[in-house]
Length: 194
Image (cartoon, rainbow, N blue to C red; front, side, top):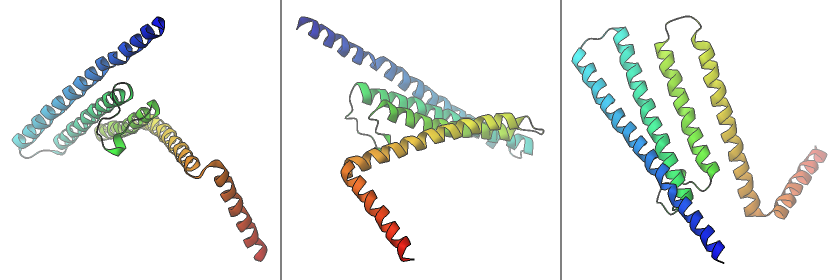
């Protein structure tokens, strides 16, 4: 009994230790938000101060704003990771919108993967705006597309799996099999009638 209590206290201590990465992730995310805000104000100030801009200067300004989007998205990744770890290990009663609820490590990975897809798209957009000529961007674009396709496939498979689990739990396996059998009989009868 004593050993059991000691082990439980150790696990409770380890659980509370998750607060350290949660706090660090929140601080990193907040730092990125402040940095992004400063960059936004700076870029707007420069843009307003210049007046007439050449196409090259406009391109530089567009790249600056795209990079700012990237910073804010990265801050979002840090926030989602902090929130996910907190919900999973500390307190799952945090009031968040339904789309941000995290009930498992898989939920956390899916949310992070979704944001990573958007970040990769923004990174590629920034490179495309910088692109002058030639085919140098093609390998980079293909690499980004491959990673996005892989993550999208991964997210799609997870969604299908979750839908099937919900269907099985709501109908019950026996009812699902019977319903599928009825559908097959109906299709066969329709073919016989034609």
